[in-house]
Image (cartoon, rainbow, N blue to C red; front, side, top):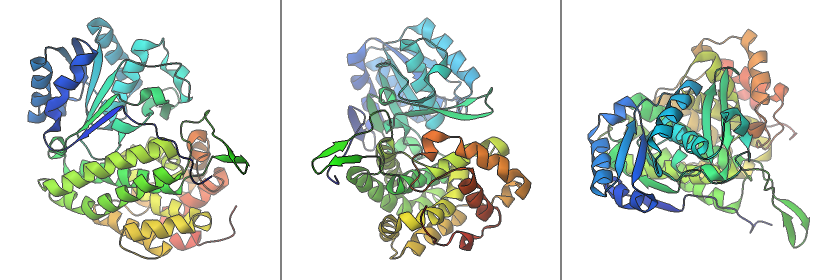
Length: 409
């Protein structure tokens, strides 16, 4: 059973300094019209100029939509869809952080399949291939260039929701560390710690492969996240090694190309890992926390990760030991404390109280987090509202001792 793995990934991945200038040659086989999704800040950078030049030099007519916004509001999705419908492109090119790439994913989806977008919320709801998408990340964080997930902010629900399907994986991922150099320190910190969360949660995820006999395994193809497996573990641990060693330097010295290169590589590996295994409690909790506090996604997942790791320790001692070794430690305690200390060094808060939350807020947050079933079901321990409340209570005051190993549930 341990030999069974699943890998869903882009058809092609290109990584290296200067690789973005190949985008024109890679896009040309899809057709003559490109629709570029980005945000105003990225559109003004020299790196974006080089991408646009590469596309036009390859003979493509490129239309730029530069109104991508954080957390992908549904109104922005509507604006992008109106623009792309008029442009009638052959290929969509996403240039930016996770929000730009996620916006490009759902835009490509709605070009190929009728709305509303809400019809595709959840897992495996996309009926078939979407318009070809090329993704060029400018932050080392979401790994969205390699994942089957797009997260959007639904105003009616009052929180972020996911659209998860292998059809959303970009056809081509182009990862050029030079595009990340201009990323500000706070964004570098929040995106980078989120990439680390992706890797850690991937390595600690539930295992959904079901043995039906000594030679038969049932693969849960109704899920996009198929759970922890040997290949996702391998990718996750290398991501943890790279990010753990270079995140602090990237935040402190954004011009350090070695740190930027290792961060982007680690983020990409983490995306490949969790794009197959999935993430769990830290992300479910952040969906609720982010909606309540309007704080950056990576800040919340990074804050919650040590508490989630401590909660899951009774059923993931071996994973925690492997994570500790990837961070230069030896014991499960090292895994938890070293990640918490790294978060503080890059400027993350250590408690929910620092975000203005109180004990009175926790029951509502716990119910909301437990309701994100796609993520809750991927946690290695049962993650109902009571469990979420336990984790949140510890995080409110920073009391990791409240989550010391107990009998597994």
